[in-house]
Length: 292
Image 1 (cartoon, one colour):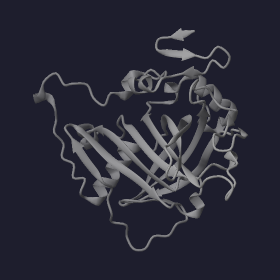
Image 2: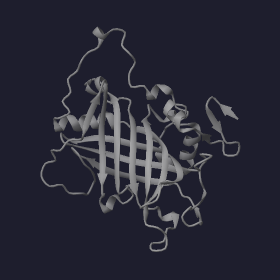
Image 3: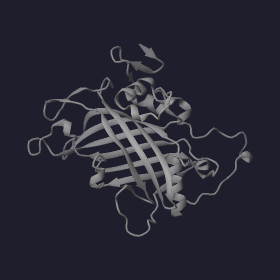
Image 4: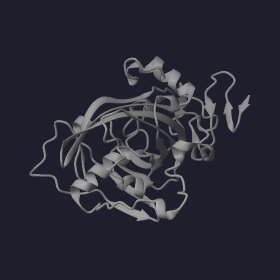
């Protein structure tokens, strides 16, 4: 059957959503979550706030506000995208798609350090049907593999000027870097990158680059603790263990992730099917007493 532009698989009842439909906001969440600001009635009614993202402290606070929240309340996001196989000298091979839910609570530790308690639950989807995978045939080996869900956390990380570190990682001196940013019209973009994460962060990709985007004036407004934001994410990581790629027998290569996402207003914005899966597979994802 069809509901709007979202097609539901008759057996799993999990939504099969075309990539352009996700960007259009038809994954089951309110389209308003993708809108960073409504046009003002008159330019004279807009308050222009100052924001200096070249100042390390202001840069860090703005990043937390854009990616998460300054009010110590849970922040939820949803991501969706494609995963390819990369082997040197060969074209990228489409492997599977992915959908995931993230939860974070940010807290200020000092002027130049925030911390975040995070957890993530994700699933791999069939490339064609976009239904959750339980079995998958590896195109490099021909072997049928069991496909587990992906879980990160719960854990806590340190968010510094231009770094994200495990809670136990030591830093030398006072962190003073700042995150790359750029502004196009009224939209601001800030970047997060990780290269060769610490052993205690082994589940993180070997390298990733995530860009958060939002409205400049909302970001500059000191009265707002969180604002709507989009994210675009590209990452490279080793073959997953469950893919059974034996070193020396199968080609050396990596997974290449291309993912888009959005920060949600709350748990109720998750598609019903994903919320039901979360409750079964990761009930602690939801705060105690939650009714979502």
